[in-house]
Image 1 (cartoon, one colour):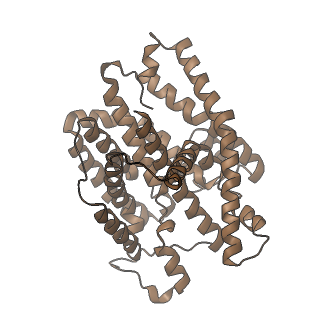
Image 2 (image 1 turned 135 degrees about the vertical axis):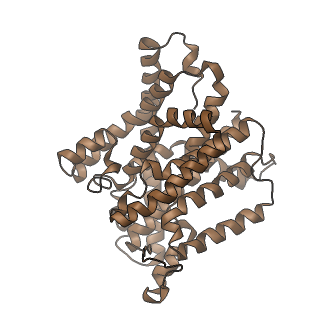
Length: 373
């Protein structure tokens, strides 16, 4: 990818981590606010039984909780397009080696830190976190650090990528997505009826979202567009998605709807022609791209102590302005932590992974360079 596209991808990562951070910040300040009512045959929630503040918080665009969905879409997009670009030079050992060293060592440091700081939740909880399987059990999915569930999901989707490619070779990508979508349509209600709602984001229920990103990557690789309409249509879709939170469709199938919305937005944004930007616009883009560059470390470290930090920086003043300033100061603190994490944990781990692959697996040094970013 050329420099402009790299910056745009980092901007998208920055938007994704800001969505995650804002969702957790709202949750930290106001407590549980989302309305989940799974009564049978209910088409629209009965909002008369909820206070107005909770309704408004639920409908706020920043409280969608769909930042992780954008990360999943970007992951499928980048990895699958990288696979297509690599062609016959693609190497499965190199692929899994790069994924491991990119994700696991920084995660392990964060896991050990939070296990000591907040507690491991017991031997089973710690073991499942070590093996990135904690998202498969109701008792461990949000123990230690509630944000870690999506990292386990991401690792499991990496492991499922060969199966995804096999299905694509057998049925084609569109039919594969339809089949994965059908699994989600059946699997999500099954989880809800089982009473284990915390497991609604199991790998087979979210695989189609990752696949939507892969579909976008394949379309772009072959020079095909997904969205050629006016940006106002995307804005209208965003409004409709916000209103969808008034219905049970949002918690049940919101990730699919947002996944489709995101691939259209990404397609539009990455094909948007370059235009000279004002100094303010250029500064904003550069800053957001930097946030995206550090997004993984922000994700790793931002969650468990967020509420305490917001209250600390707002001097325990619960006025809206004080809390807003507290949220801003907390983000700046995590940005600083992420800067350290990126340079001290992420980059050394990537270099170590490159050395490890060349030392023990590579038949030729060029193989490592062909793997998707």
